[in-house]
Length: 183
Image: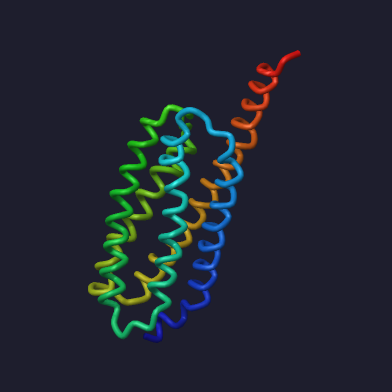
């Protein structure tokens, strides 16, 4: 498919970035793991795990559309299923945001952890029927846009999580540690 070949560099860049950022998330998680805070498991399920999932989906879409398919049927059905499952997962994450006790999400948190992923996965799911109804170029731009959006959503959320640990959790732990030391 000559149309897919035009996207090779795009998906190499997006997929490589997503893979590298997944690795960095593991490094960050290892660094903050020695200072557990009550309720962090629930917060991690609401804030940390979805970031890895978004990076993973961007990586998966990059690999899926980089493969030498003969027709667009299998990749479009696959990205449609990924979009549907991602949409359901984003609904689960929205519920987890409500229930986790560590942090009260602000507008920006709801937007980047709930609304934008819901929109991205819905668009991905709906775009899977486009190759059969429209020209091939439109759905490829949509899937590329969704992959890039998930990458940027993940970058934002990863930065937000690291900032929270550095500027909120860490200073609290240091101040509590100072109170517990004998004078």
